[in-house]
Image 1 (cartoon, rainbow, N blue to C red):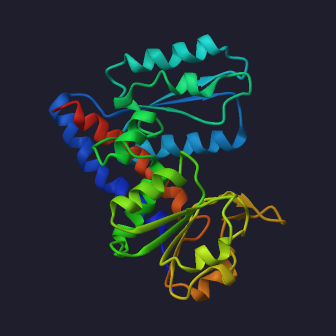
Image 2: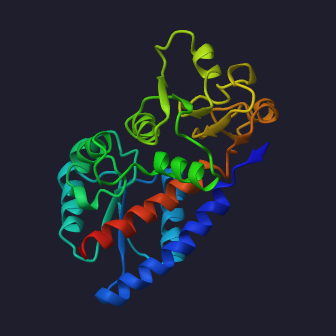
Length: 282
């Protein structure tokens, strides 16, 4: 069994990006810039934002953090994003979710111009992915594809099963695998005979948000298992959607939690930001 090292891969990507950000700075006289907007003081969000700022430093990207209080109004939140949208030093804008309950997240995200949507969440970017056109791809599924590529996992002609259908992971993940010539099945809470569907997978991507949901009897011998989940188990310990300890001896490759897909999400955010900056030079 090969343990897929997302942490080490992400570090390599940040190192590679440094050369591209330096080249951009040499051509334009300014740094690649990523703006992160955080509203409120959600502890998990604060950790993510801190990690993103740290990642920017390592990749040579200027980070612009906007920390707004929880009582920020809809108008104030939208105005903050609009100001960043007009700023030529900002090439990517990220609004950290979840937002306080009184705010309309879709309207706030809608203020991010498509060319600065480095999260790849907009309907336009998702549509471009579906049409196999150039656009920005959601960071987590893009990170999964990068892991598969760097670990030389064959997708062409392989049967891939994605468990989960969210707009952030499941749907774009299925489209990416389809574009990579896999035969793709998307499973979800209404899927009948879920175990049987999972057992067909050469590549199984778990993105359902339930701790240790994928058990050993649901995984085919020799499969490649990608665990996108971030949950807490009964002891409060970080775990994925896959029952790692019981599944690992049955598979050819598997991502751990933590240290698997998570670090790749931030690496791909940085990569998307650099690509967005480079597109301004065309």
